[in-house]
Structure formats: C-alpha cells, structure tokens
Length: 144
Image 1 (tube, rainbow, N blue to C red):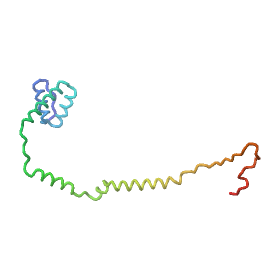
Image 2 (image 1 turned 180 degrees about the vertical axis):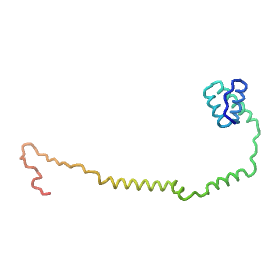
Image 3 (image 1 turned 60 degrees about the horizontal axis):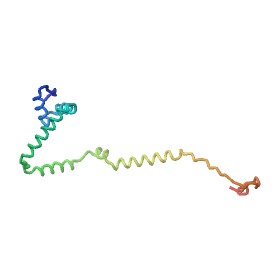
C-alpha cells in the first residue's frame, strides 16, 4: 500500500484511526498516522477511544487454543538456531576472551614502552644546623 494523506472527512479519519489501532496499515502508513496523532490532540483522543473499544471487545472473546505441536516447533527452531555453527573467523572476532587478551597485551606493551621514558624527579637533601654552630655540615666526614 502506498503512503496516505490524512483525510479531511471526519468519518474517513475515524476509520483510518481504527485501522491504525487494529494494526492494519503498512509501516509507512502507520508512521504517517503516528506523526499525525502526535500533532493532533483530537485524533490522539479518538485513537485512545478506539484502543479502549477494541480492548473491551477482545476481552469478550474466548481464548483460542494453540495449534498442537506449536511449542515443540518453537523449541526445535530455537535449539537449531543456537547450535548453528558460525565460521571460525566470526566466532573469533566476536569472542570476548580474545578482546580481553588483546586489551591486556596492549596495556602491557604500553607500560613497557612508556616506562623507560619517565625521567626520575631530582632528589634534594637538606642539612639543618642549629643557629651558632659552625659552617661545617654533619655529612662532611661521611663517604658516599
């Protein structure tokens, strides 16, 4: 179905909103109606009315039993999808352990490469003397 323009006729608008609430419109049409509902408060109220109407009608219906074997088919299909093998390169590329190992290796490489670039800070030594003592430092007689 091609995209639609919002009709001017009130009955056609109501019908369009009802079709939208029931999910009968194409994705493009539904997107256009959603934009319209965001901009027009009256249309949004009408959509809420239709939702309440159809929800009430759905509560009057008896539940339909599931076809026999439906859950077995679902379980089989999900199990098949889970056991489907990926190509080796894809499994390796999506492997969290590979990326953890690569990250740890890069971190070690960066530390090893940048470690020697650090220049040690100079160390200063201060010798304090009491006032009135000679000008000779206490370390003068020591050999280093």
